Amino acid sequence: MKKEIILLKKYQKDIVLLNYLENLLDWDTETYMPKDGARSRSEQNAFISELIYKNLTSNNLFNLLQHLKNSKIKGIDKLLVERLYRKVERKRKIPEKLVRELSKTKILATMHWREAKKENNFKKFEPYLKKIVEIKKQESSLIGLKGHPYNSLLDEFEEGMTTEKLKSLFSKLKNKLIILHRKIEESKLYKNDLNNVYNIKLDSEKLKKFCKDVSNRIGLKEENSRTDISPHPFSQIIGLNDVRITTNYNHGGLSPFTSVLHESGHGIYDLNLPKKYLYTVLYDAPSYGAHESQSKFWEDMVGKSRPFWIYYFPKFNKEFKLNMNFKDLYRYANQATKNPIRIDSDEIAYCLHIILRFELETGLIDGSIKVKDLPNIWNKKMREYLNIKPKNDSEGVLQDIHWSHASIGYFPSYAIGVIYSSQLYRKMLMDKKNIELNVEKGDFKGVTNWLKKNFHEYGNTLTAEEIMKKACKEGLNPDIFIKYLNKKYSEIYEL
Image (cartoon, rainbow, N blue to C red; front, side, top):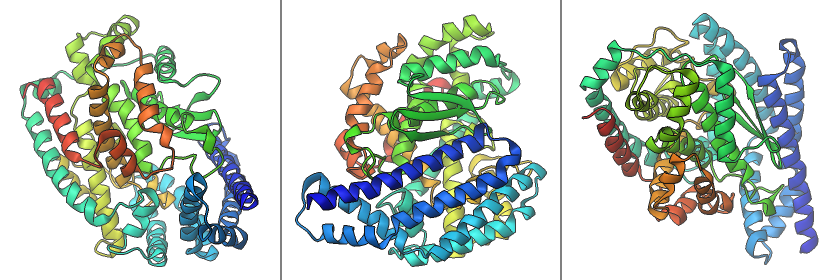
């Protein structure tokens, strides 16, 4: 049996290395690739994607997994086989012809999405999105999980999560968030801020130093990471001890700084995955929500906390000569806004943005919503949930790239990650009574070490819910997130 396990690990390593190469190409596409290289890059991406698919769905690998699955292996080897078998079985349900069709459609869809967004014209993107939805419906049918057809797509990103569970959870969360957001809008401080808008302009070269400083304090160093510029901030693991993050200094105010915090959270998670599982399916996060919990932990729970700004406020004030006192800057860092853009929204509105997308995606997949009606439904829900009317399609239904990438089922992971992050932060404060005092001094090592011990070290050996139950003694619990927001924003806005 030892020979079979060695062979299995060889198969896995080949697939993982191809994935890293694909990640490297994607990173280069968004950062340094010359514009005219797009056609060649699309061919390179398609070539590697096809290689990954063929390796992952090969009869040799599947037969080996079936043999090992029915054998008497135990421990990590057994878990390794079970995790990989689940992934391979899912992929094998999708015929290569459909994979190839989706790959080509995504390239065209992304190209037309960029043009449509630039021209504020959803019609230009509509036929390609319609095609993607049709393919994803076929994929859902082929995967064939029980319940709502969206479950088969959601499960790719959040193992074990269901549409039915999220509908109930999001319904409760939505009502609580809308109530809190409207209470803030009625507050005196909120209205005063509208009349005294802080137009903070931070010199990008000086801000780069702060971005480097905060990522270093989290644990990203020059020898294991790099920070670059891209239109939309993202992070990517390229291999062992090699993570890449990006930000965009054209975004105003604190946005470049907070995006580095966010992406550094992703990066440190990848760097802290258990090395003993390298080049296997266990050397990964158990879900996208798990990964998002780490980025939102650093961006929101730490990066928008009072202790964090006690440390950074005097340094920002000195370097940028801000005409603000601590109380005003802390509120500015956490300000409730009427922002139609998801990535620029406040902590309360963020999950409302996600819930809106979840409702649209489930409707697209079960057929209750047509692609052509998306702009009107989007705008109607934005008015209902956030009292915002997008100015145009680019500010509304075209703002995210996800649908052009066929990532239907992905959006709920963002909200799940936010909720997880609040639970983890609460438990950390219970475990480490003085940790906020260290953060006030700019020492984040205790935070990183707590996350590594209680979250990172499991890799993909457990589901996200199982890790949360070990770390926090409970699974997904939106009540903790709601309590966190109510307490924090009641103090900030003197509600």
